[in-house]
Image (cartoon, rainbow, N blue to C red; front, top):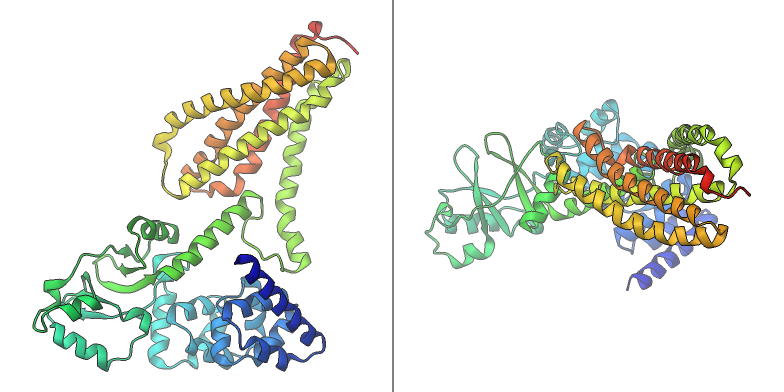
Length: 455
């Protein structure tokens, strides 16, 4: 199925590109207007900036609103720069409040105020209220489009109000129950209302519901969704008053965003970036960490320089140095991936360090012994010296133990210092394993040089 969908997307992009090359933006928009907003966003993300903006302008306003929130950050910036404040306000008026807040968050304070001046007063106040909360918090994720009624209200009154009031279909199946002060008491499903006696009060049939504090980080919110296995969750303030609701579609976006961010940070990008970002910008994003890697590489090279006479005396050391350093680095990266994931999911904290340290030490001994034994045999048959094979074995064991321990320790220390463990762990750990691997391998070779045959 995924292959078929991919082929459809590619065909749609090719057809759109043919029209764009002819500068027939109106027909390109007409073609896309018949497709799902997600497919339209994927096509627009692939187009050049000018073409993307021109096609977007010809899309129907309703579709523009749905597409804009699905574009990557780079494309959103391009589109918003090309639109007037009045055009943006029309888009905001077509969006759910939480989506409108996300779009307005891309604007400067001055631009935001101009856009809001065109938005109807009631919706403007809702948007302003949500803009107070950090983007990556529960308040930044929540929508104010929900149904909440007083606990003293009867089932009959509730059903009548549901018929009279216009509410989005996606929020009408759950009714949140509050007290006179607006504090959340729980929820009632629509099906419960249909089964209950009309004279029953909501407070009598309310069921408990998990909620999240308004300032809770979005990763913690996602974790609670997974824990309670729910499709929506109410957001409350410090006094327990209902402020909004987070739906599962927003959590799916969070999970994708956080996973992408961690992958980019592990590879030294720092923050997520689209593959279609401008060439110069992509180069600028990559360069800083590559320059840092260059510095750490010279740190490792300085260790090698200490043993240059040893290497000169036994040239095969140079052949196996990158093998030992590389295996240690790979071991460290494997451990980092496990530790960063466990930290993100809240499965471990610093209190588990001692137990995990012992475990990683043992794991390092086991995998180092296996890999070292294989590599040692290769070294023995290649060079014809059993002592050299033993030296390679010991180098692997020592460096892979170091890789496991560093892969555990570095991200946990960064987490303790309130730094993102995904951002710098890889650079630090690979430096440690390079330095450790060279030092152990070349240090032992220096000590036992008499047992090695000079070639």
